[in-house]
Image (cartoon, rainbow, N blue to C red):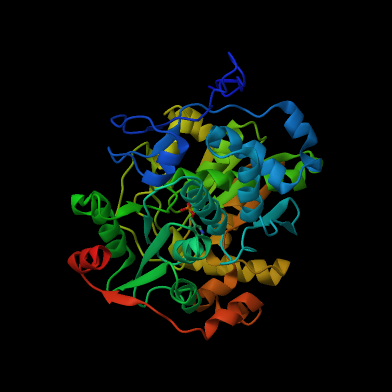
Length: 453
Ligand SMILES: *Cc1c(COP(=O)(O)O)cnc(C)c1O
């Protein structure tokens, strides 16, 4: 249920301005409530729960009636302001949003009733640019607007895309250091260049191991009391509310482009940690008219299985060609359940989920190119497949699949018959020859020494 109007402003009660802020509580229920800034700085609550906003208010009809005339910044501002409250003044928040949304979000028609929402026109060619840029700028704002704030270290493990987006988003942000762990030899060449060539406040750690090893080291560091008072660690994955919530923006920007079609809208989201799709569900809570969500997954099919059986079974992740979705225990699924009042019947009305093998994904990439002259990356191709599956029984819909990364970032897994058709953007060519800087580590002890030195 939506609680309306809780964030209405009471500007001058008795002549005093009362600051309005959103409170966030932990979904584990054992940590105290915090404001937006604290939720951003901490990432995860002390009880290891994910933060969730205390209330969600739908946007007024007047907003939806006028959306075609609003700029991306104005749309973003209306969408996010209740979650930030007065902690960032209107003007500063609008600057943050305009810098975050500084590129295109086109819905490209692929075939009748199917469009691709291309989220890869940002600096690192992945949708994660939006969340990373917004979070970085919020932290930068808090660090420069206050005196004596301690430096924060953003510690993040990446299987490829998160690292580049975080490195780029946080580059040169005041008071923030970024340490990125990635599995040596297991990210694509372009992705590695994106993480290791910026320098400055961005440090890359190459771990002789798998992504799961990187993730385990990061988790261990967050729990390690020896950092207390020495280094403030925070996360920059979709657990962080400042990375998760701005992902609502592009669902609204897509709606702006599709509103005149006057059709039932379905969004199909290739999903790993389910942060992206969960942001779409928040957009729906704000009143965005989305009729259904579809999650596409690779062999890591925890959620499709859950919808089938009602039993949630986390599993070790399996390596696939859509490696940004190789997640065996999707961290945001708990938020999705919360959005649906922890009721499976409601959840199933809003969400369908399907899984695809690598072979099916490759076939879809080939078919999309041969039939529709469209090149999708492996993640987008899974979004496309899942959408088509849903539309088989729901043909009266307009479906949008999220194209979450540029295909050039996955050249090594694009089928040979179409790989030559992938164009390499200029911005990528420019970083290919830059010098790589990274530190090679194997154990947690080595990481800890590195961070404490
Ligand atoms: C991170 C990522 C995903 C998965 O997004 P989640 O929010 O983790 O579900 C899908 N595609 C690409 C290209 C990604 O980088």
